[in-house]
Length: 210
Image (cartoon, rainbow, N blue to C red; front, side, top):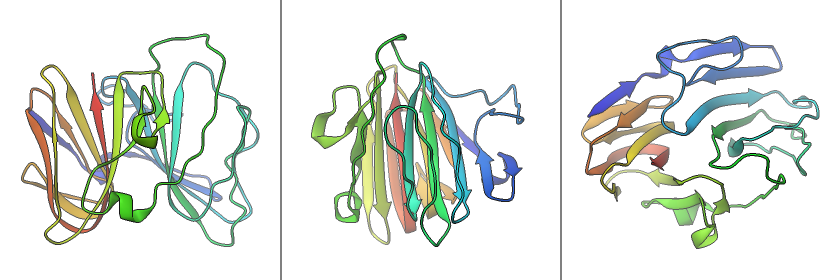
């Protein structure tokens, strides 16, 4: 079963220094039909103005991934601040995944995945065991990133009982034959594989979820 979530259907927030689009219910945006997908709880597309950012804060019992699309996002430690020290706008996705365990000591990782490793293929960026140089998360979830253009084609076969969520960060492409543009997403259940093709400057995140 395939379901499309269009970019314009997301929640929106404009705080001046921060413009954000919420794929799922978050903060003042509440949509009972979009509370998450499996263990995937939040995908916020954020743009932070230069010299501004979130104050120092912590998170409890949540796996949080910041995927930077443009600019820089500085943060370290577990009490952290997503702050834009660059001269240009920082554009990133903030992703929350519910962990399989709670109350464990907090941890932090920061890794760079170059464009070459994502071009024309799915590059694993987060996993429960840190395989292939990915960051480690405490959940049965695999997060892939890909850059697709022209004749590029990438396929992810899903194990029985698993589901997939595809978020188009920028550009456009077809996912299982469905045309998607930046900000659009596709939910897949009871589906054997996810096929990404016909990209035009596309950057995509694919979540393989239990």
